[in-house]
Image (cartoon, rainbow, N blue to C red):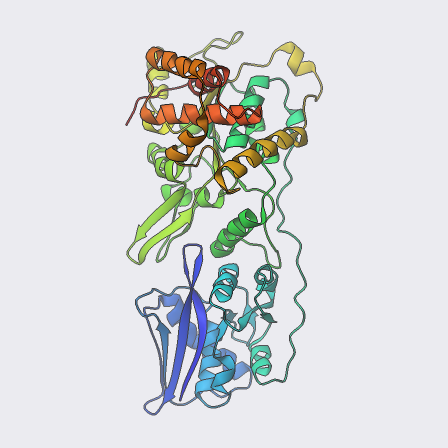
Length: 508
């Protein structure tokens, strides 16, 4: 007898529906799973068998074949257990096969018949709604995240018996109670940063247009404090952005149990010894997302940039340019989104005191040259704002907290972002991420602005990419000031922000 239900295969951050066909026929008692399963799927036999026996259900002494279609799509994960167990019962005639047909089932079975939480349930709920299936059977711990998708009937189960009784009409599932938002550490306030008004203004521009920033300064000048306060001045996340980030964290298995949507922008600060796989993503089989993807719609902060390995830094070039990570593995190519605000902090030299007004630098010229050479031109060319922080003076050090709060700055940033949303037709598109064609259509530079731009090009070494990024900065500065066109002052300020404290800048 044949029974069918459905589950999902996680491809990147998307859930692809997989038809689970189970056939129970005559022959030697065996259980075989086909359809390009990984080892974690193959091990479902032992979990499924033990769970059924613990639920007082007989394991069929027959030849059992489970097919996961489409067969060309690689299947990975333990979330196929629940669909396989229900398929075995239906194919053995102990459940009506019609009752499970059209349902999407995800969940890992424990040996005592419990249903454990799994990753990627939010992606499964989205796939369920897109394909107009009857509903989603999922672990109770994952139900709140699935319930965030409107139009999907979610049935939370804690045991395999719950799922069996539901399809037999003997059990009514409880109402899914909305869970609180996922816990994210609250951002510190910008008013706590003493001095550094130019750097604060640079971060405001970066937040308004989605630009990348390099902060260079001596130890104690406030680089890390400023970077950690950037999420607090970024615009409040829209529902689409929250869904985008939550789905990614769900696929990565980092979404807290019984947590709903992530509503605060991520802040990721990997250690200097992070590997390329840890930063970009990797692992066996279908690769998991790395730090650049976990920072999606938020901030990726690399403190002490000079301490990161060269191959790690150079791997950032593609996501900084394209906003996506492509991981090629034997199992296939996986795409993960990586649109983040990149902030890097570094000292001006190995000892950190080159150019300091009161502390002598202990580095030789050769050491400083080697230090500067660690940052390649192509990488620096992708960083829009490069600003040098001055050491704090006595007045700033002795003063108390003051200046504008993060809330006040964020209000201006959101106003500039609303202009960009109206201009580009989407809240997810910023001056830093749109195509050059869309950017040129909204520049509206007057004659003085164009002359200023030409004058700066003649006086500096500026690549094609560098020119585009200067124009993006100028457009953002104009948006913050509420100007419909880019003026000469915007171009001048954008150029100065790009070259100040620059450690290099040659083209590829």
